[in-house]
Image 1 (tube, helix red, strand yellow):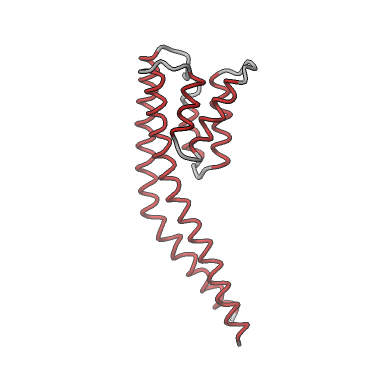
Image 2 (cartoon, rainbow, N blue to C red; image 1 turned 30 degrees about the vertical axis):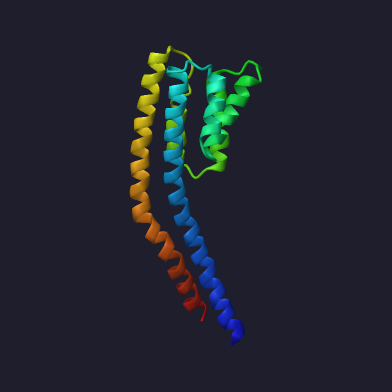
Length: 173
């Protein structure tokens, strides 16, 4: 009887843990979008107000922001500083690949961040400001959508994991 009770607890606990990790990913996505939006604001100020060269501005932004957002800026800066003929667009996309592998952002978020790659470093400070403002507004909208998904999906994942675990136990009995 002890082994059955232990097995039941492990099954329910395992499914419950899986559900809690799913809910945690919703929370992390909202935080990551906010951190990237703030970091892009910092990068914009570095480029448009301080007229900092792009590689140095990316490095400073990587120091300013939290992980995993810092991976995007650090990888991009590293690619530009290597001076191996990498364009700003290629460096940004390499940073996006690293960010995607370390974050909870979805494909739509990464695609949105990729939209700036073509224009990064190719125009004057005024045009760069417009691009960054537009991207930050789009990220704000993505962040609001992520909050709505968090509100609806958090409880579903949290309780759903435990409920599925209980159903599995009932089916096994």
